[in-house]
Length: 352
Image (cartoon, rainbow, N blue to C red; front, side, top):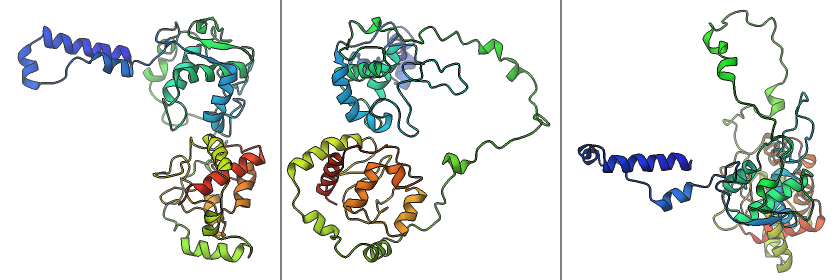
């Protein structure tokens, strides 16, 4: 990226200084990129360490930063959650029929991990990590792959000393010659395969398009059904919101909710992201976030009158995929009851 910008800057400068000034005057296009403009985009880190900024991060700090920013998708131990990729494990599997490609088993350069995390992560909030936080996360990922000890501190000084197991596992791409026949020969148009076998169906892979023409659950009907279904002693949403909340519990819930922030927003100005915004969810009927495309199973639950009471939310937050088979929620769940209670209190405090 930086090379492209520098090239453009140099080209523009050459055109301004030495090329036809009449042409530049006629079109009035472009100018040399300013140093600060190039620096804003010049974030890439090369395998030889070029572009690596000064900084450091320990495995211990990385565990905390990873839990707050990465674990909701990649698991507490970088083991992956749902369809989100594993970042650790897979040693010795690259020759298998179904290899496990992780930072430890597959990636040849540590700079790839550092650059990608710093540039693109966490999901939905890219470039929010500081340099030291990035070092710490990479250190924790190395530790999760048994490549460093638990007291290891990764810095720009020892970065190139880390040996990646698959550093020698890549070869020069020779497909231009080896696979030339694929695009030089006449394509097969008939009888190309003896038989066709269906190996998987789209419904199983959850890629079947949903019918957007189906009517969304009627909110008033859902509320009415929920009222009939819910126990008499179940407090109304207004009563739940009005109940006094423990400030310390709400504060703890805000910290735990960092595991959810990659997909969900709460508070003033909250919007739907990968998951729906969660304002006013406690005590509300399921599936009412305006404009969010819910899964079939949640739509069905909403039509059946599901209300997100504290009990229902607690069960869902503990094991989403067990609670609702077929949910798109990729998060594996909160392991501690205290964390679940804290998140629910925080959601109660978020308002409508």
